[in-house]
Image (tube, rainbow, N blue to C red; front, side, top):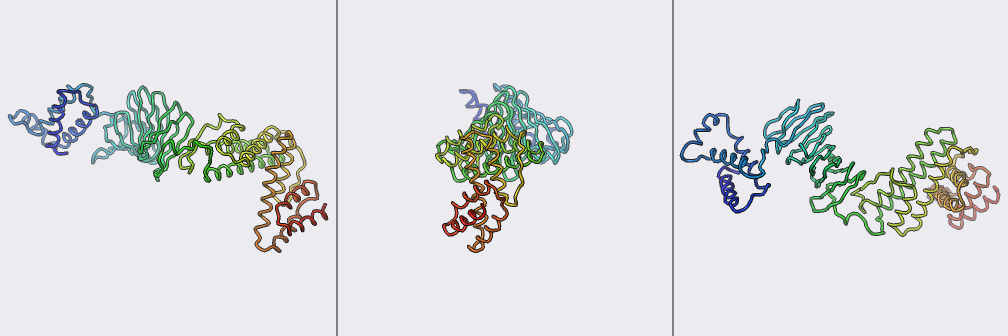
Length: 449
């Protein structure tokens, strides 16, 4: 904007101000543009400043100066925009980019609108807007001062606390609006992914494409640069996408594997490892609820505090999103596995001579742990035991030629113990094979048992 354009702009502003009160946004824009031109003047102009004001024909410089006096002192609600807050370096290199100048910050420094703050590697700094916001910029962050109560985070991480008035932190994806007493963090990765975590009080997250969602304390929202935040992205129907189903199945596999590892550690006397494994298994299982609350393509994840959930919440939440009874039953069986494992780890003492067939070993562990449960829980245990029968089957069918499949089957059968559980395992396996191999397996079962 040239001085001629600025003069026209201010004259228009004065004409409108006669009949109506100017908006805060208009005043701020005039403040900023006027001060930019005022600060661009060289040192040599200062000696003739008052002469230019006192000449009969008002110069451009004088007009700008007088306009500033009027705007800063006469208009209602006007405040100096030179100081938007303070920057307090905590440790490490911190600098301010102000126009063409780079200022190395070593002590508390006043900020101006438009200042770019860069926090170096292994450094940290605090930005304070009195009565509005306190933000801690973490290592390798870069942000810009937008207003007296808002920041724009280009990259890095900000830990924020809101005081007596609402404040905003914006990114290339949108902005977070917080209210008094809120605590939240915002992080922007090098690739542009934005993560927002609500820690205290609700906050609103707005997308530049007019999407909006509300985060409660403990919620985590992740946004990629190519996603649109809107309520339609969060599934409200009872159908799950393929991505969600695959994520749920993966979490259930992880949960039951960790639970069985906990049982193995308990049998070996490793109580500390066993307890850690069962805790990890529960977290994996409970995190299924987060998948249900995420967008259908899993690009937007909205997390809940797992500590507030119980194991029974997972099947209930799942039944509200899908009509797939097999998926719901599997979730119920893992819930039963985790409950029985957690309550019986301390009293597990059965002999367990493992074989070289890992899927059969897990089959035995499931049989033993569900023996502590009720009849309905034991029925659920059969669902999980069948999973390891199928795993054994897939291992056999990995051989492309039938003669190789039969050869490997014979070898694996010879590695099994001669026990009722082994017979149960093979009988269940037989029902999955094609008729020709199933007949051969039937002969093997009769001869071995």
